[in-house]
Structure formats: structure tokens, C-alpha cells
Length: 399
Ligand code: ADP
Image 1: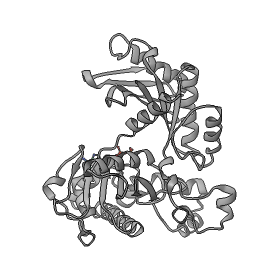
Image 2: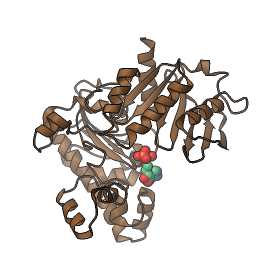
Image 3: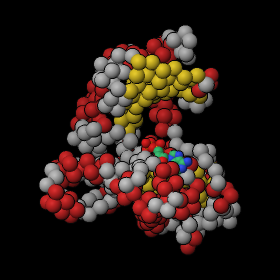
């Protein structure tokens, strides 16, 4: 089955055409500057081919048309016609409490995604634009929505409840939701396979460390806690997002500088995290170089990040009553050996023993703990597109 995976942003749209059974990625690419002018980058991995073009994309519908044109092109295309696409799978950020798993997109599903807009005000409208564009351009193709929040819906009440007046949960659905769920689901399943264990009976901590970062505590293959909250601002410090902080800071800074809440949130979302501490960059590679050259604030930003990730690993081991495996994934987790070592060292008391040589790896599945480590530490490259394609194929095959 060939599935077109779509991740639509407000002015961009990423796509992959893949066969989830063979994991073959036939083509992938990116539409940018939608609504401004329009630019397509299309890649065919098997042929190491890249095609770039300026194409007018006043809306997401023209972007999808450009994608279909590229996929069927006589030069850089990979299919003869649109008929070869069996289904479309969409990444949707916020499924609220309505979605505990992926689902076929029908009118009721679209309504429910719309109802989640207040919870995901930046992403859900963009995701909907992608869905509506596909419905317009490919009206007969079955479409599936895969939610970033769905994997976390197994969290127990005590983990998702905020200690604020309960009516805000009852009336306004204020609770911890968590994100990167598709990634945590994928890597935790792969971790069980790599350990040669059934997910049942396993206690895992998944560290998705990228530009945005979150950790998840996973028991029996199900999420029991995660660091992000109602929105993706909570948890560990990120590239530009603050992570956990004292809400008193808002009132204090808004009072001192006269910021309104929008300005304050822009600071917390875009100017904070390791960028905010270092003043150097949100990119961990830049921070490592600057720290190596003696930049104190770059060193401090990295140290705060390592410390907070380590603290959550400790917290989740406590929450689960132990841990069998720790997973590192996403841009930083998959590539930065020094970061993994800095986070995992000092955890010997809980049975973590790293192997420096094995840890010297990047971008491929590997066990990086010592053979006699009680806790298996792993690098598992995430593959959210594959998960989206697999869910889509599974749901569509049952129609
Ligand atoms: P996103 O959250 O945008 O999907 P990614 O998972 O792609 O982000 O991660 C991007 C981050 O990965 C960047 O901040 C970059 O610094 C980091 N990264 C990529 N390669 C390396 C590397 N070799 N060493 C350290 N950090 C890396």
C-alpha cells in the first residue's frame, strides 16, 4: 500500500510517499512559503535525486497539487498516476480528550479537530488546511488523522491533573496532554524489539530531544506520564522554549516591562530555552562548539538542559517504581553522544552503566549501555512518518 503522509504547517507542508510494509520512502519533500509565493523541494531517495521549483501556492490546495505533479512527473516522479496513492495520513497536533488513537477523517472527525483549536491554536488550523486541501484535490482518497497527543491519553488521572481549581478541568479541559506521542510510541515499540522483550512488563523512559523536547514514562507499552502539558511549552528546556518555570515570573516581568501576555509568551516560546540562556544559538551543535571555546553561557545552557533531563529520568523511575530501558531519540538524542553521556552519567545508582565506545554512534538503532548494565540505554532514530503511514494503512485496510 502506498500512503502519502502530510504534515501541514501554516505556511509549509512536508510530505512523504511511502510503503509502510516495506518502509520504502519513494519520495519526500517540502512546500514552503504557502500563501506568500511558493517553493517546492522534492527528493527521490532511491535515485539520490532532488528537484526544486518556484510554484505559485496561494493556498494549501495548490501546494498539494504541486506535490501530486512532482510525484507523477516523467523526470522526478515515482508513480504513474494519482491512482497509485491508496490513502493519505495526516499529522495532527492536538486531539484533546476526543482522540485516544488515530482515526479515519470524516465530518465528525473534522468537527472534533476544530473543537481542539483552542488547545492547539497554532497547529490545528494549519493541520486542517492540509486535510481540506487533500479532500479538495483528492476527494476519493481515504484520509486518516494521527494525533501527537493520542499516545499520552493512557496517563492516569493523578499524572494529568493540574493542581488548580478542578472546574477548569471539568469545564475547560485543562489538563496535561503531552506531545511527540507518535515518536514516543514508535521508539518505545522499537526499544522493546531491540531488547528482545515483550512491551508488557517493560518500564521505559523515552527521551525525545530535538528542537522541541519531551520525555515519556511508558509501562507495558502505555504512556503513564510525560513532560509536556496542555501545550508544548512545559517540561525540559528546549531550543527556544522555556520548559517548566514558575508562573510568578510572568507577573513579575510583565509588571516590570509592560509586556502583554502575547509578548510574554513570545519570549517564553521563541527567545527562551538554551537560546535564551546562552544568547548564542538554539542549535545544540553551535552550543557545543561555543562551550568548547570557553563560552560560559553556552556551557551553562547545556548544563541546565542535561540536569533537567536527568531530573525527569529520576522522577519517572520513581513514578514507575524502576526502569528497564532509557531511549534517546530525535535530532539531539540520535546524534549527540556527549549529551547522552552527560545525561546518563551519574545514574549508576539506578543501574545505568554506559559504554563509551558503544555510545560513540549516531543516527542508527543501537544499545549504548554496557553489557552488564541493569538498565538498557538505547539510541533509536524516530520515524513519525512511518507510524503515520502504518496507522493509515491499518485503518484503511479495515474499511
Ligand atoms: P525538531 O524538534 O525540529 O523535529 P529535530 O529532532 O530535527 O528537531 O532536532 C533538531 C536539533 O538536533 C537541532 O537543535 C540540532 O542542534 C540537533 N542536532 C542535530 N545533529 C546534531 C549533532 N550531531 N550534535 C548535536 N546536536 C545535533
